[in-house]
Image 1 (cartoon, helix red, strand yellow):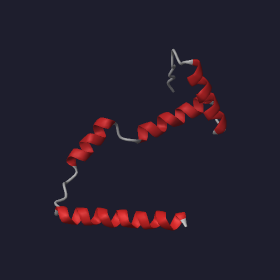
Image 2 (tube, rainbow, N blue to C red):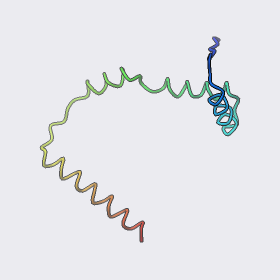
Image 3 (cartoon, rainbow, N blue to C red):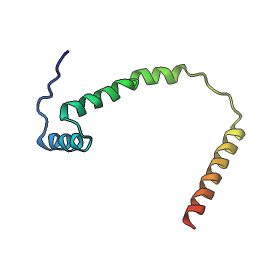
Image 4 (cartoon, helix red, strand yellow):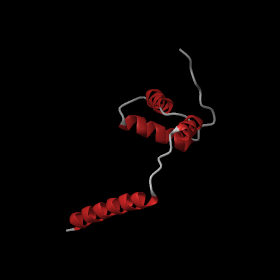
Length: 85
């Protein structure tokens, strides 16, 4: 198994890592390793752009898109109004 060393880590960042690791009930090493795992599960920016560029485009009439957006906004507004009561 390989090791990674982070040099020149500012003291305040180290303290934040220590606090977050403690909140998670983990060591700093385990906490950072989990951060790395989560990051590596996501596509890189370049991979994500390639996926987006290869996604087939939908040919929807503009009026249908505007109608769908308006319906969604009205639903959201109604929901917010109901919460405020």
